[in-house]
Length: 168
Image (cartoon, rainbow, N blue to C red):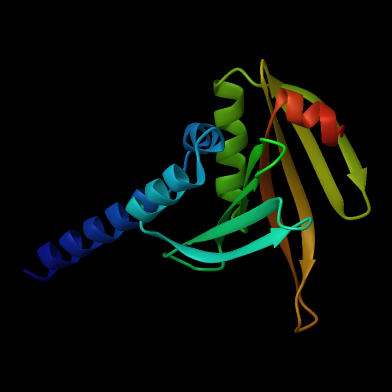
């Protein structure tokens, strides 16, 4: 009986955690969607609103969502401009395993490695597929407790957006 209860609880927990996991395909799709669609999708996946901020004299905004499983482990930031008609999606995690899985997914989706760059403690690897750039970044994050952690961020940019603002 105890074994059955344990199996059921483990299955429910795995389904809950798995329902919050985002694939690279999810991120690519969300990058092209409106904020309303992104929010609805993430809320259905049991993510929650984390913050919002307007920048550049209110023409640009950043809205962040976080996973409910471990609130500090996964963050999605949706960046958009009201005037320049762009939107970008950044996904941040502390999980090396998740980061490596997303790189493997990029390769499986026919993204080709283009170049890498090291700036201080920031390592950037650029992948490209017609119409879309993905930058996989690794960097050290110093905390208040004199400790540091490795953080991984995946940034998605439409090709014309990338060429305008951010050559690696």
